[in-house]
Amino acid sequence: MSFRNAGAIFNDPSGHAFLFRKIVGTMYELDLKPPAMSAFSACSHNRPTDLATWHRRLGHVGMGSIKTLLSKHLIDGLDVMSKKIAGMCEDCILANRHAAPLTRS
Image (cartoon, rainbow, N blue to C red; front, top):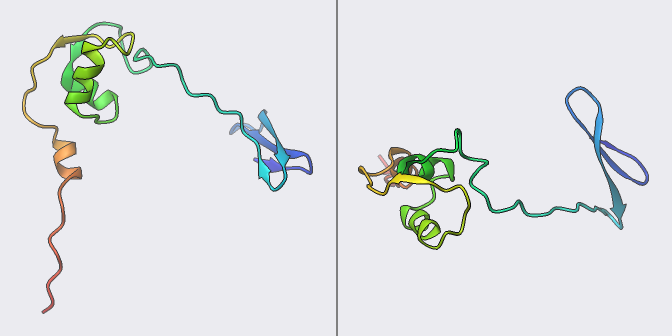
């Protein structure tokens, strides 16, 4: 990224400019639009998969949330072959684990 009087230029790793943003006051203005709600960006072969795989693909979102997305048909492409849950996600268990307080010796 390089800064000019009129704004900032963003460059890819090879040095080619791909985005220019103008300066407004002391800030650089970015026009960000939210992505369209679609699970196709997370699917690999457009075929149904299990809940555990969708749980990981969607950033370890809760199973209840995935079931709500399914039941209300909120996301196109969210195809699940089985709604059975086989245990808990090991990564989520470790992330939610709390450390024991330190003791003074």
